[in-house]
Length: 346
Ligand SMILES: Nc1ncnc2c1ncn2[C@@H]1O[C@H](COP(=O)(O)OP(=O)(O)OP(=O)(O)O)[C@@H](O)[C@H]1O
Ligand SMILES: [Mg+2]
Image (cartoon, rainbow, N blue to C red; front, side, top):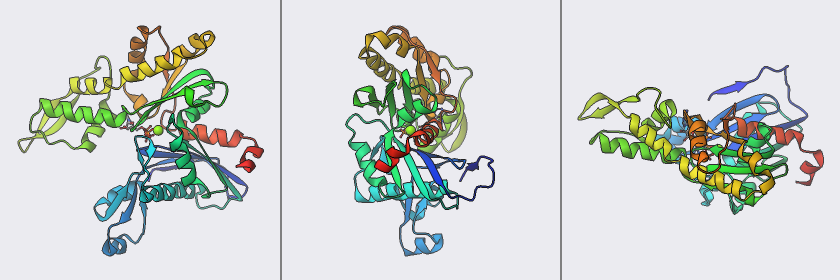
């Protein structure tokens, strides 16, 4: 597991540990006040039978460890399109995963108190946040579930007249900030996100190269290396198995088209949130759009969004400096800055 600890004075624990978690469909990022900063794949595995349990020597596996041993496990991905699945087993998996995140955050030390904020995808009905809150209750001294784009806003100090667009695997979450806690009317969500791009690439490349054997993992790797919108800086070529042979194939137009497919719906939602904002502040909001999440790393994204926004009154789009950890870092910062009374009330 890629675990990175920032250099700190010898920390033996004690006192209060604050934890920020970005609970995502594909990965969960953890930032803690003791300097722990890491992520795990959002997946939980239980051994399929007694033999699997014996050779693995564990009753439950998480993240990469679970993926490496997937043939011997029943895997659970507790979030789907940003929503927690409601089967008891998925809820249990989610709870175990959050517990495991707290163990990672503690880094083998003991603390008097642990306070955690969990960022969850923005959901207009709030049912999801409540479900997650129930899953998280009682794991540590206090947990609070807040909307994920809000934690991003907190980390980049974009709390007033700004718009966060968090492009994840399952969902794109948008949140409008106006100097207070955002409410449901400030949030919109779309399920055309990273996973959807993967499906599009798979579909388009399979149509162009008939008979090619392509897996979902391959497609995701290509996207994470070569994703772009607008004009390609250089051709995108990949190796494809065709008729039992490896061939180098160009997939430039397919990559561009698949990545572009999610942008118009995002821009429509950005526009919707601008148009329904207090008219006095619409211009400020327009000039302050911040994209984050794994999908914000698509090359050319901010320029492409700005071009589409030009037809809707314009806008300025920037990519967050730390797009992958912005959510968990913001949740941590919020946890640290929240007054003590808040925590005792919870
Ligand atoms: N360089 C990249 N270019 C394009 N997409 C990328 C890149 N790196 C990661 N991604 C994609 O970003 C998505 C993961 O982003 P992130 O970790 O923010 O999602 P998540 O928080 O797990 O999901 P969600 O927010 O939907 O619950 C995946 O679809 C991944 O393939
Ligand atoms: Mg996310």
